[in-house]
Figure 1 (tube, rainbow, N blue to C red):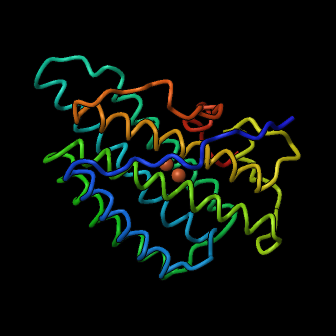
Figure 2: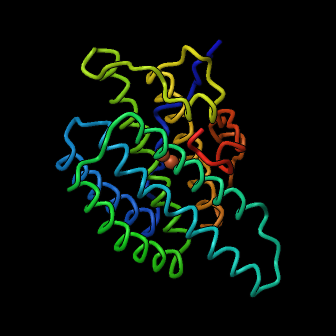
Length: 232
Ligand SMILES: [Fe+2]
Ligand SMILES: [Fe+2]
């Protein structure tokens, strides 16, 4: 039986520092671009934005790994957490590619955006990791809002509640009868977890108190799916 994940949809980190205000403004600018480009095409929106969402974790993991090597210091679990985030976002992409097919134009946008975003985020993480994690925290706040809109589209009949893709059923250990609605619920819970983890990382780098109990629960994942050849 599938139990709907319960998450707090109202979590928002109020910008306090210059880094926060920069991160929040940057996120709102990108949100405006995404809203203009995709409008209510949520399946397409998910595909393109998940190709972006899977970048920061890998950048953060790489640069944290290199810093730990240089300083000969422990990472306190950050590297694995960030690598797992990148992998989880890639599984979101592998799932939604089964639900919607990107247009040729969207594929070209993905290639262009990856060049710009990877390099820009890499530079930002080098200069200010606390700003970079805050950016991701705000991105994830927006992802939670977008997937809530996607759920409303399904519930109100504007998007078909098709059966869940096989890969999603395996990765999130969903029942055979699972639907797209169930997938969106677990993906949104993943995003809420990333939101809280990245805000907590930024808070730690800001020297603020960190409440680890405030992190949204992560849905169960079968990580073996990520290391097997996906086409069964
Ligand atoms: Fe995602
Ligand atoms: Fe995410």
